[in-house]
Length: 282
Image 1 (tube, rainbow, N blue to C red):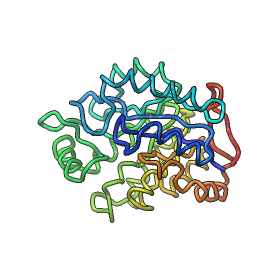
Image 2 (image 1 turned 90 degrees about the vertical axis):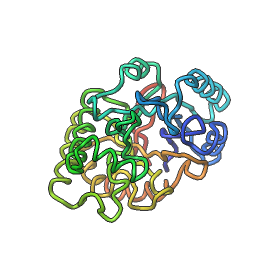
Image 3 (image 1 turned 45 degrees about the vertical axis):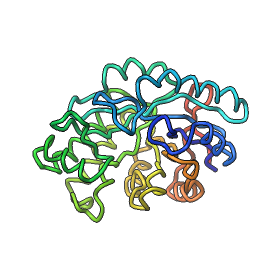
């Protein structure tokens, strides 16, 4: 049974429900290890989906209150989902300095660069925004973007070693019915397999992220099942996270994930206990 969720959002960023409501839902669902991981502030002008700098202290203080309130029934950890920037090839200096203050951190790629007006071009926002980013940042070449994305994932794992690598193949989110690129193409498979090779070398944990399932359907399980099978073959450690933006998503599809992962051969998932990551049986 899966009893953890280290990827939880709230009204501090783009979540629908409060931190208190998410903690209550997690406890009621039988989880005993959770972590709040709001989207960290970006280097671009403040957006509508990230934590703002002026709320960081309040965010951390609220997590501390909840950690005390639920001890010892449920461990509540302090985290952020921190962006790696494709245009700069790294984290922002601000976030690099903040990471050591966290119990753990999730490294993810959402942003491909800045548009002409300074706003971020995102792979995780609207199709209109993504197409504008491909045109402005990659000269209209989507294959160039996709390859840069997976090279960025590899660099994120090898150079920064986040505790958890977030939604490995998020690049496919807007690629419904292959409208942008062919996910069966040899060049695409080569790109993600090389990224997995780098992750295997890094020792970073890859999350099996069920958040896309509840919001966008089965094609948005991150990573896809063929990738998960390759993760198993490479002996890459995993955890299962809800990437939860509402109370309904706090442990979404966990029983099904556990059964499918066991069928592939996984013995368990990684949990954070006493400040260290340990393998926990299903």
